[in-house]
Amino acid sequence: MIRALSLQSSACLLALAMLSVTGAGRAQSAPVAPMAENVRVDYARVLNVEPVYETLRATRAEKVCDQPAPPKPQPKDEEGRLARMWDSVKGVFTDNDKPKQAAPAAPRCRTVPVAKEFQRPIAYDVDYMYKGMKYRSRLLEDPGTRLRIRISVMPYEAAPVAVP
Image (cartoon, rainbow, N blue to C red):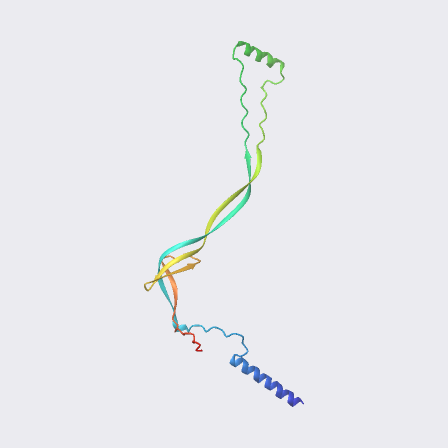
C-alpha cells in the first residue's frame, strides 16, 4: 500500500514537472523581448517643442473692506462780525474748548470669493528628425536641442493567412 502511494506521488510530480517545462500550465505566454544586440541608442535633432498646459482654477475667500466716505464739511455761516460774536458766546457756554468732531465711521467689511486661474506645463509635444524622417512624441520634460532615442530592429513576421 505504501509502495503504491509513493508510485502515485512520483507520477504526479513527474506530470507537474513536464507541465512546467512545456508551459502548458500557463494561461498566456510572455511576450518575447528583443535581443540585446538589436537595440541601440542614438540622437535625433529637435525641430520644435510645444508645452502642453494644464489650467488650474482656485477660489478663495478674501476679506474686502470699504472705507466710508469722509464726512462732508459743514457749510460755514457768514464770516462776518455777527458770526464771530455768536461763536465766542457759544464757546463760553459749552464745556469743551474744542469743537466736537464726528467719530470716524467703522469700515464695512465683507467676505468676497476671488477666483484665480493659472496654467502650468504638464508635458511637451516634441517634433524631431531622425535619418530624414520627422517624428512627434509627447514627453514629460523639455529635451533641449537633441533627443536621445532608442533604436530597435526586429524582423517583420506576417501573421499566417487562413486558407478556407
